[in-house]
View 1 (spheres, rainbow over the protein chains, first blue to last red):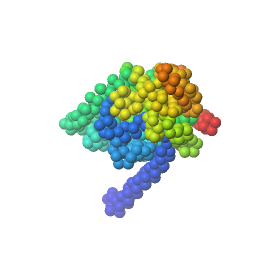
View 2 (cartoon, chains in turn brown, green):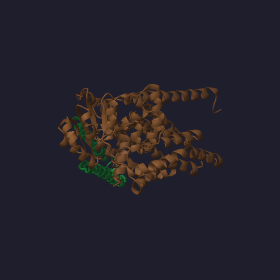
View 3 (cartoon, helix red, strand yellow):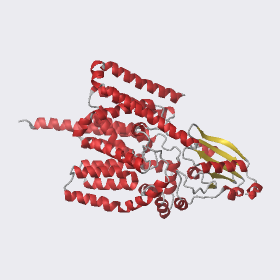
View 4 (cartoon, rainbow over the protein chains, first blue to last red):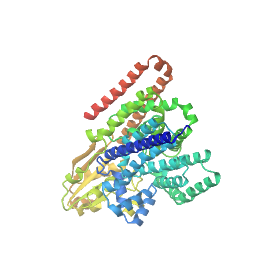
Length: 494
Length: 64
């Protein structure tokens, strides 16, 4: 007999050992991933995160009013609102959903690799990339929706591959309500579900019906918000195919202040060429190729024909599929291991560890809010709502106003959103005498409108002022804190 | 607006670097059989040296 009870027991015990080894390895890797993601998770918020935190603090009806007039759907902000109700608002609590989503994505990538029947080394390479990719670490520490978006789209794919209809429906709806740009990814997965006949037609019709009905309110909101996006957005136009390559590079190697871009460029270029060389192989196993190529093509087409949207965080849901696709390709032979996998592993590890060891990546950045000698009777004035939201979060004790610019300034908020958020807007001339001394904060960066800089020039020219703290000065941005001590006679002249 | 133009220039320069790296890698792979059958270890050594050089350059930038 082929299987005696003795041989069966031996095979069974080997299988058990194998599964246990995988589980133990996964737990160990999750702990390593958690350690990397906890490093500086309490770093200062930047503008987008301060916006998330400000919305989480609002009463529910004002949160919804603020969100409707913005450019993103409400699911993520509602989640943060719930987190605030349970745990309060801090850097750690606002980033907690992203942290948990980032860790869960590691497990989902493992399951996706198994569902795709990839080789064991390829699955582990993809899992390893998900754990230590600087891009994943960064967005697991970001109080924005991108980590959850990646998880939701990956879970939808898992539902599709494992033929679990409610996982597919639930994850698709979650993705669509987290971010408008989930649509290309979910549409591609629906297309694959239909063309590959993953479910019988009646069941497929029910699944698609559930997604359609479930997303109907979201679709109406999307149509309304598209107007806001098309009239007021800052993403640079897609002018070169090199942007697609550099964006894919970002999906693995992105980290603030990354100095290893030349090495990552070499690795990304070779990886993409290997994927192209393998086209016959992928022709026979098209799922990974299609879930990677089609969304990129759709988003690139949208950028060319409608509005520039091609940046790494918009294509973030691609990341797990890109890791799996690359992993399968670069583990197919010994020389590919030597040419790609090992150098890439070393580079990713260097970038991931350069944060904790050499000061790259997310910076603490909170000192400035306490070192400016703001005294009782002082107030802070902002030329842009960006710095207003951050300073209002860190210095709620100080009266603060923002210039009520309504000229379609890039990267700003709409009037109804600012009103719902209770942003204190006032022309400086009208409030100048309400404080003994003012601290003007301004950023001149790539998205700053000329009219904003003209206004700052007017304040510095017409009021006694001195630039006291340089927040930033490099080839693409300049930021200052300016001390203004107005005399009411000057104010009266205006 | 000067920063806007500087920013777009930087992005464009980065895109060009990535595009030419991809083209170089693609041309290299067109000679796949020639390179890897005849000069396997030499090709590997050149590529690895490039990576090591790029990593050292990145490390020096970080330190500087």
